[in-house]
Every structure is written in structure tokens, then in C-alpha cells.
Image (cartoon, rainbow, N blue to C red; front, top):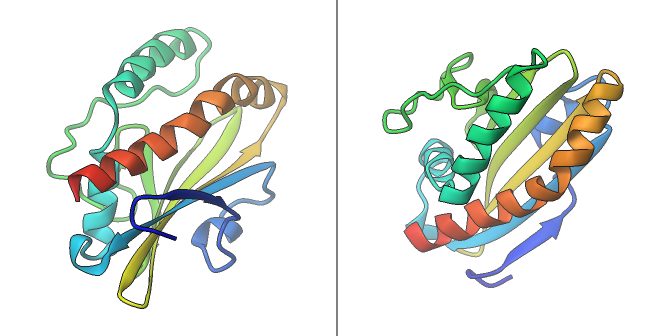
Length: 170
């Protein structure tokens, strides 16, 4: 894998995401390679990922928040993304820090329609650092399935776009 390529892969078996939900109804994972000196630890990597949101995604989240607020689903907080705290329980936008270790940060949220987790996992081999961003989802009911059916196609574009922005910024 070259440092400018994003590859769709399986969720890494050693990821915190794999065991974070009672069952996984949807999953995806994208992996990118970075030169070892361009990426620091998993905390700096997660901050870089969370601040690499394309403007079109930010605009779509505003529309999403307006729509889902009417049916009682959680909306994203407009928290500042400059001094991101990655302590368990802290919030960044729509994400809550669920868990973390020295190589991974697990973000997510639980709602009445679905629970989701997003893992940012850092690995290294042959002086290349690999970043895997994985998403797993558990549906509680038909509303969760319907909601994710609608957002799945957009979701599949968001993560690679954020990884692309990360590459440009690193």
C-alpha cells in the first residue's frame, strides 16, 4: 500500500470496535498508509482525523441535525474542535469517547434507534504507519435500519474524504 492510497479493508480483528456492541449489523473499514514521521501517536492522529471534516460534510450534518431533531434523535453538539480532549466520556461533535488504548481511540454514540462506534486504529510496519478507520453499527429497531439505509451511501464517502484530507494535512 502506498502512502497516497486508501484501501477498503475488513475491520481489524484486534480493534476495540469488534467487541464494543452486542452484535454488529453493519461494518466497514478504510486503511491508509502514512510515512512514520508524518503521524504521531493515536491521540494526535485522532485529532487530525476529527479536524479533517470536508466542508460539504459539515453542511450535511447541519441539515441532518435539523431533520432528526424533529423525531427525537440525538443531534451533534457544536463543540469546538481545537482543544479536543480524548478522555473516556468526553464529547467531540456527534462522538463520545467510548474507550481508548495506546494504539486506538473508540468513538461512538448510543441512541434509541441505533448504536455506532468509530475506531481510529494506528499500526506500524516497516517504517510506515497505517491508520484504519472502522465503523460498526447495531440497530435497535426499524427506525435504525431505515435511518442507516439513508445515510450509508453518504457515510461511505465521508470516511475516505476525511482520510484524504488527513493525508493532505500530514
